[in-house]
Length: 293
Length: 188
Image (cartoon, rainbow over all chains, first blue to last red):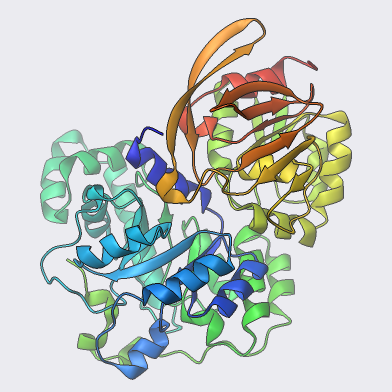
């Protein structure tokens, strides 16, 4: 098959819209996620809340573990590599994962540069806190953007901040005069051609998902109503008291995100959510969202 | 004329854009009663396991089955899987709108995805269109359907005269002829 790579990469991201992508650390968790209706799973050795607690260097997952998950489920399998660590990404591509997350949740491997994602046949998703960061990642070849939020916090406040920031900046671009776009591109640190595209269409040229702190069906609905096209749930499911029910409830919440009665119904049978952290409890140098350039 | 687009999960927005181009008003379908408003239905691409679970949770299954007795249904990719008679590698229960058997991801994982050209004839006109396969399902057996296009000797568009199933994504390449064929030309 011939490869108009960008179309095929962004195409898979399009197919994941209106769904929930769940972090899983074992094949059994992957099965729970698939049975709940996840559109994809993110295979990783430790969920963000555990990485935060344990410390040390967080790296790409063990290939054996990724293969175990690929064998267990038929939905797409994603995996994370460190920012700038293109060798890890090459290994993930060789394993035929369906999507790579160049993720701030892992310890960065390069403090200046991200991966040149256009060199790969499989698509990448990257985190962003504002539109400049989003367009830099798309310029490098990302096929999907997600908010960074604050992974492993169980606290939605940072994801909301990042989603609102990106949405407001997109709106601002659409009402600018052409003369203003170049200076804006310079200030945002974003590729001019992509700034022009957003100014014209009022949206990113790739799907825009939410991640980082989603713990409840209401959190998922909030992010969808703020403009997210799908949600990633990391620690929120398997750190809760009833992962299978919570996973299913969040899937239902994303599909019916505007239907408050439905949201009340799916939220009512759940046990406790993960405990979570106030952002002020996390010292600035330990905030994962600060990683990425 | 209004046509519904099943909007539980997947790339339903792109199908709406195709419908608007051919002057059909799209309506998002998330509940069975919404089918009363439309005269055709699209089941889009996305994750078939996810869509099937969501369909069961809100009783859309029977709603679509009785709707499909009267009105045409077009399915792409995951939609084709849901319209099939049997999915050979999964315990997913399909709608059995087309007499075909399906292997999910039959064309491989994302790394094997890509675009090819396929030839087809509709209403005596020949077309050559791009066909984008993304973790696409493969038709492994079929009966009582007309093969409208094939790739490497395997059917990729099939019709039973009323419903149409496609294993790739015409909506990603702005192809409108298949939507027109199903929803604007009456029964074939």
